[in-house]
Length: 627
Image (tube, rainbow, N blue to C red):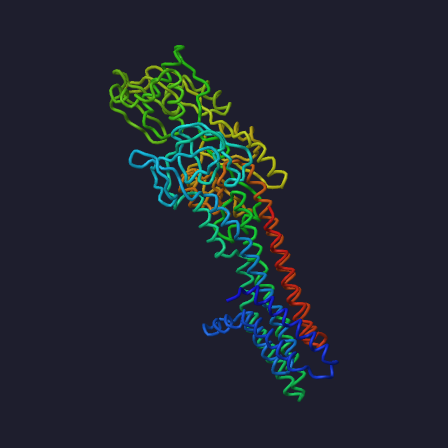
């Protein structure tokens, strides 16, 4: 069966041929020949076949739609002897519907392009040798080999090799990304230089790229608030138009001029049809989401995309969002001058901890000769009676001495190191105190370790770009006030909320969103409640926590903060296009209705104006596909 577009085109060709035949046969007073009749009827049937079956099916389910109005108008025109006008109505409506489908298909082409980024085969280490397998057979834990110029089959971590990756097709970032052993890589990125051995962390069927496509397909189905608004307008409008047309026809029956008034009722039926209104938003949303996907942005629903276009304030999490999320030891203050001993004792207690500050201390200890491979065994031999106080620190026996490592207020009960600790905090550092203690308190302060999570190099530029768009920025963090203020000053954020627990952070975001549309940006588990309560939750980086990505409605595959301002600008532009389309659709109905009621416009003119308006609205909506 030919596509709807082909049938619409065929209807148009037959309509043109029938109209020309009418002109050739004679003037307006001469009845057209049987050939002209046959061509016009063929045009009518061909065009009507694209929408009449669907309209009748929906009617059987108790649903009234625009297609039903067009069906009634076409049947009425034929009954009155207006075959040419009925054929024109069928052709123009079928063409508008076909163009809408074409626009949606065009917007979805980007999804197929994304899937094409995954190669069909991969080199996998199985049974002690390298084998070429289908990517769909790759499992998490498999060892993959990716040569220079090849695409990475699935998500993973580099085991061996150094290279640079072209990630532009996946994340939208134009700069090459250098990778080394231990670093994460995404499916679809191009390995540009050396050979890499990668341990797969996801299967070939379920990775970051396939999930992106699934989410965008879900977004196509889920319409935005304005799309639902258009549906709410169209739902009562269709039966309202039917009642109005029936009332106009009854006026004709009462006055005795039934032919004129029934014809006018059909014109009213077509003039008030909300077909342009029904397509005003969906085409725009789908086009815009397709463009956003090509830029490395995953949007879970049309509603989320529309809310993204309304954002006037952005709330940033600090750790892992404005900063790189890897605190490094910057300063060690040792009471007795032995800085290496302070770091070593802290590292022994922090072995096995997943806290970011613990990892920073362990890295610093490795630089001082602490054996990273044997540290667990060493700690097991020398550390005893380890006790952790959540949110405060950890203590344990090392070589017969009670050592405490943690928050300054918890460790330094004598307040001997409070002043240097405050000085480090003013410089934007997180401070860890190390001391020897007895059962009653601190015996001897050994020193302080100042760690700082380095600010992302692009953070200040991203905040400046948001400010240029008149989008306010605020930072939310669980860090101490001094540390938070220092980071905020460096990136150019004036408003800071510090020392927040996850629940408090969510409450803060809820208050901010009530004041004005606010997007929350984060990447950690502790950000999940805030992401869920914001006007729009945005997760940065495909390697963020699963809880954050699940809670967010928008996810950026890349972690460059400079992707956010153009994304907001894109959403705002799409929102303006939606508004324009809705206004145009309502103006068409408002303008044609009185002209149709007064008999100024006939059926052919109303059909032409209405369907041309649809074409204009579709074309305008497709502009949202440009990034």
